[in-house]
Length: 165
View 1 (cartoon, one colour):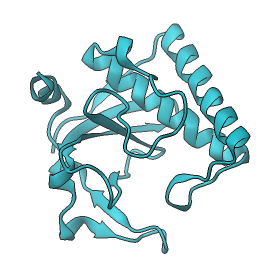
View 2 (cartoon, one colour):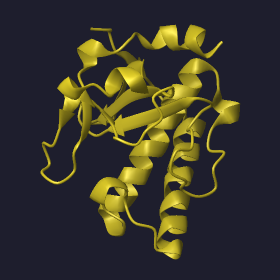
View 3 (tube, one colour):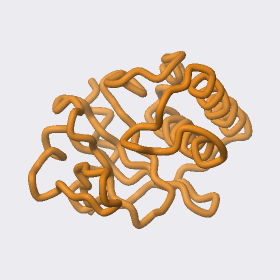
View 4 (cartoon, one colour):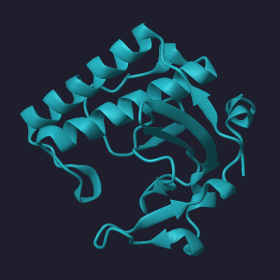
C-alpha cells in the first residue's frame, strides 16, 4: 500500500478551493442539476460535497505542480477531467476507498484524496481499467453501486507525474 502524503493548504489555496466549491453549488442549484449517483443536490450536504471535491482537486493540482490547469470547467459535465487525464475522487473519511463509477473512462487516471478533521491525505492513483474489476464492484450504500478500490491497490502518487508525461 502506498504511503499517503499529507497535504497542507496555503491560505490562498484554501480560499480558492472554498470559492470554487461555493461557485459549483450556486451553478448547480441555478440549473437544477442533480447530484451524481443519487448524491445530494441542494443544501448543506450538497455544498459540503462541492467543497470537498474542490479541495481535493486543489491538493492534487498543487502537489503535481498543475495549479494553472485547475477549475477549468464552468459547469458540471459528465466525463470531464479535473486535470488533464486525471479525475480526483475526494472522500470525507481517511478509511474510505477510491470510488470509480461504472461509466468512467478506463484510460483516465483516478486519484484518491481524503479530508477528515482538517487533515488532507493524497493516497495514490490507478487507471480506470484497473479499478473496473469485478472484485471491486460493491453497493455498500444500497442503491448506489460502484467500484470501490482499496488503498492497497493504488500506485504511489509521485508515480503519477511520470504517467502524465
